[in-house]
Amino acid sequence: MNDLNLPIHIGIIMDGNGRWATKRGLKRSEGHKEGAKTLKKLCIYLNKRGIKYLSLYAFSTENFKREENEVNYLMDLFIQLFKTEFNTLKKENIKVIFSGRKEPLKDEVWLSMQTITNETKDNTGCILNICLNYGSQFEIADTTKRICQMYINKEISLDTIDPVFIQKNLYQDLPPLDLVIRTGGEMRLSNFMLFQASYAELFFTNTYFPDFNEKELEEILTTFLKRNRRFGGN
Ligand code: FPP
Image (cartoon, rainbow, N blue to C red; front, side, top):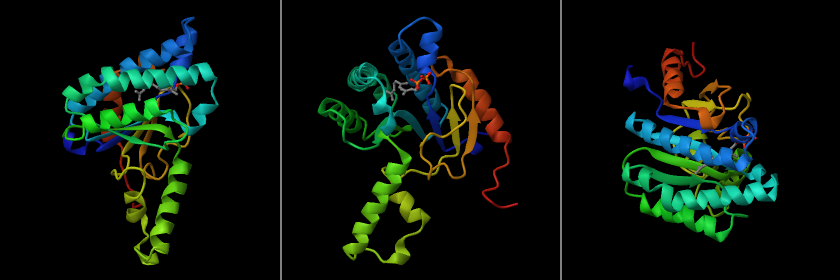
């Protein structure tokens, strides 16, 4: 495969954990636990494959509407993963960053996010951007507020504001998404990196996230390389 044309930035909407578990007569939490294993495998694989940026939709601002038990389980899982399980990713030279709002995350979750960010800040491999307590519409609103404040402070003029400037002022300054994959059979973006996904190639698979693997990912990459990306041109 011609690695030169591989996507620079891949986004994954990790959907189907709950259904994976229900199908097996297990608790939904078991699906999330299994999803976490898949996530680790995929990160290691994509880092080795030379992918520079990987963004994952871990928890949306709307996910706080789920049952308290499930939200608490997921928060504890995040803490455990960032504190211990992510040691493997650290050793693999992966740099972890986050996109999202702080409120209403508990201090312990926020602290574990800051710790893993600090511990991996000098790593030079794949940049793993975890969208946690994230919503794209909130991101755009928060960015707009920040830019308005710069204007009020007379730090910028109106002419400064163009798409590149907006992108640089999102939660993280990352290149645009080239490829977005959603597992679990739904065909929508669900408020995931809408600005960054403007020209992304979209792939939807029925596979539930815990069953998603390197082989299917490689098939998607092969199809991606065959697509003709025109960016609005001919
Ligand atoms: C969506 O499946 C998945 C989530 C809301 C959680 C994703 C979390 C993980 C994979 C755990 C580890 C993550 C990180 C970043 C450390 P769903 O529950 O909506 O599944 P369903 O549509 O079948 O109900």
